[in-house]
Each structure stands twice: as C-alpha cells, then as structure tokens.
Amino acid sequence: MPRPSSALLLTYNSQLVEIELPVGHGPDSGAQRRAVMRAVLRCDTFDVIALTRRWDMWIDDEGLYNHPVNPAATALARRFGYTHQPYHGSVLLTGGPDADGNTLPLLRQQLIGLLHTLQDLT
Image (cartoon, rainbow, N blue to C red):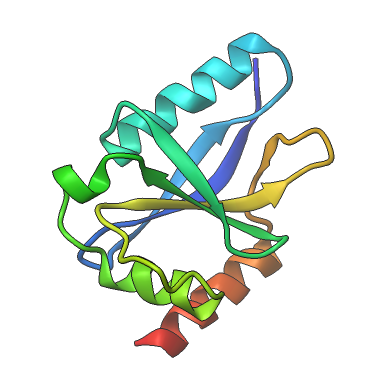
C-alpha cells in the first residue's frame, strides 16, 4: 500500500486544507494519486505549474469555465513569474517532482516556506 504524503489545497476563498496524497511507484499508486487530485480539485483533467524546483501548483484544466478566480493562487503564481493569466478554482500545492517525475510531498521546511510566502502575499 502506498504511503501518504502531504499537499496543501488552496481554495478560491484562501482556505488551506492539508491533503494526504498516495505516493509510491507503479500504475496503481499513480492512478490512486490522480483520483485523489481530481476529487480535491473537483475536475476531470488537471495540469501542473512548476512554481519553483521545490513547489508545484496543480490546477483544473477547465477551471476558467467552472470555478471563480483564486486570488491567492494567482498572486502566488505571479510571485514566481506566471503573470499571463489568473488562476481559477482550488489549487493543490505539492513538492516538486523527483528525478523520475513523481510528485513529492511537501516537506516540513517546504511547507513553512510556502506558508510564509502566502502570508507575504496578503
């Protein structure tokens, strides 16, 4: 059974919710992780924005059509140079990928840094 990892859901109204994502290798763990991500993002398809080498932001591919603007996610993305669009709906924040492209959990120091960054944006 895959072990859980920490991620943060940043809702469009700036609430933060810790999410446990299944991690591991193999098709079952990847399918489980994607299912949880679709459920928490409330979408069918999602995409990733590599904010930094250490933080990824996962978004609903069709969020523009289905969800309100997420001001905190938009400000976070702009902080790291993604200024071309606002982001809509909840976003999922995780650690950056490993060498094999697998999503990594947010480690304690990454989580603290992310929370400080979000606080600085408000």
